[in-house]
Every structure is written in C-alpha cells, then in structure tokens.
Amino acid sequence: MKSTIDNTVEFVKEKLKGAEAGHDWFHIERVWKLARKIAQTEDCNQEVVELSALLHDIADPKFHNGDETIAPKISREFLESQNVSEETIQKVLFVIENISFKNRSQAPENPPIELKIVQDADRIDAIGAIGIARTFNFGGFKNNLMYDPAVEPNLGMSKEEYKKSNGTTINHFYEKLLLLKNLMNTEEGKKIAEERHHYMLNFLDQFYKEWNVD
Ligand code: ADP
Ligand code: NI
Image (cartoon, rainbow, N blue to C red):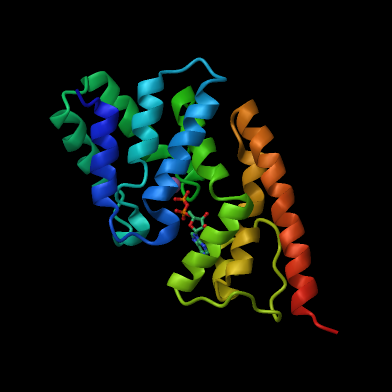
C-alpha cells in the first residue's frame, strides 16, 4: 500500500510541473533529502519534517502575486484528503508558513525543531554549486543582468539598495546567499553550509577575475 509520503511526492510532482528550474520538483527532492539527513542528528517528528519539506514550495508567493495564503490552503486540503491528523497538519502548516528568508524579521520566537530542520535544508539548497546554478537560472528567467560593474555590492544590502543596483544576479549573493551560513539553526546544517559558503566565495573571486580581463 502507498504511504502518505508516497502520495505527497506524487501530488507535489504534479503541482510543480513546468515550474522554474530553481523551484521545481528537483529542488523539493534535494530539500527533502537534506531535511532527512539533518533530522537524523536531531530529536524530532520525522513525519512533520518530511511532509513540510515536500510541501514547502507548493505555491511560492513569488509566482502567485505575493499571495502567501495559497500554499497553506492547498496543503491543508491535501493533508485532510490523506486523513493526516489535525495535530500533524497544524505542525506542517506552521513550518511552511514560517520557512521564508524574506519574512525572517517576523520569525517565531521559539521555533519548533521541525521548522529549524526544514529551513536549514531549504537554505542549504540555496548555496554552493546548486545555489549558484539556481540563482543564475532565476536571474535568466527574470531577464536580469548577471552583473553590473558600475555597482559595488555590499554584504546584507537592503531591499532598496538591491533594487537600485538593478537586481543583478551577482548582487543577489550579497543580498541573500552569503548571509545564509550564519543563519543555520542546526549543527549538521552549519557543517554543510560552511563548505558550500566557501565554494561561493571562490566562485565570486574567479568571476571577478574573469570579468576584468586585463
Ligand atoms: P525565500 O522564499 O526563502 O525568501 P526565495 O524563494 O526568494 O527564498 O529564493 C529561493 C532562491 O531563488 C534563491 O536562493 C535564488 O537561487 C533564487 N532567487 C530568488 N530571488 C532571486 C533574485 N532576485 N535573483 C536571483 N535569484 C533569485
Ligand atoms: Ni524552497
């Protein structure tokens, strides 16, 4: 018999057909695997971790006019159809409603371990070689410049500065990607992020070297 997890995989694959490559089923699959790996090192509810990882980008507000209510609604309907307990549904919805980097200023004070794990997994997939690939893919999808040599990026640049910088893909590293290492919640997450962070710094060095042909 098929498990709830199997059914969720099938549901999410179907929902994400045609999604931009950085937010497609393969992103979900990587986050799911990373979350399972981190979950092994923590005392947590495995079912909540897996369901949240699978459902966390089911209707990304970025692609739905900023509407943050669609994903929780679709997820609740699906989980109810699978006869998942109300307690589990509430825990999963809490994770997917609070996972976003964008909304980190409104983060809950004592986040449950399941949120910490899935958030780390999602952020790890935003850095390293995969992070670089996803970011350039998204920039291309938006028809953004890769880099503007007239703009000096700075770490943690504000939304306004970022907008003024024409939102180049390289600037997204400074607005977000290079900050993620220090936002890791779990020890295992920190370890994985450290290596990937290093790889991005090397990439940026090489990028500037190749851009500035002399
Ligand atoms: P969150 O939902 O945690 O706020 P996003 O979904 O906005 O994060 O970002 C996920 C990934 O999408 C980023 O790590 C990056 O790869 C890509 N991305 C988002 N915004 C941009 C951007 N302005 N330029 C390039 N890539 C972006
Ligand atoms: Ni994600």
